[in-house]
Image 1: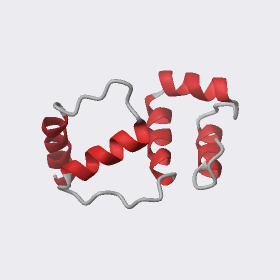
Image 2: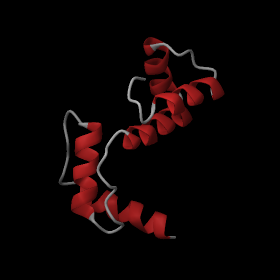
Image 3: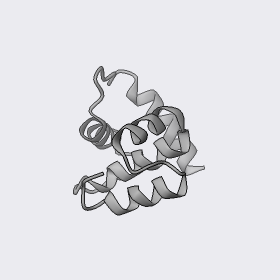
Length: 92
């Protein structure tokens, strides 16, 4: 809601999905609306000045995930399998 790289886009998402521009409403929508949560997850990437890792850079992708989403209980041991699944999907 406050980062200059994503603030106006986040407001547009809220308007498009009829979510009030208020922190509690946004947090509720993230928990209950997958489309809203996905949009906000993508906007989080806009707040990171670093380049996205190249396709196939499994370690760089983990670093990006860990840095931006700061998972409370990360599971790096499961990352390779899920990364490969996602990569196959993206590459078609």
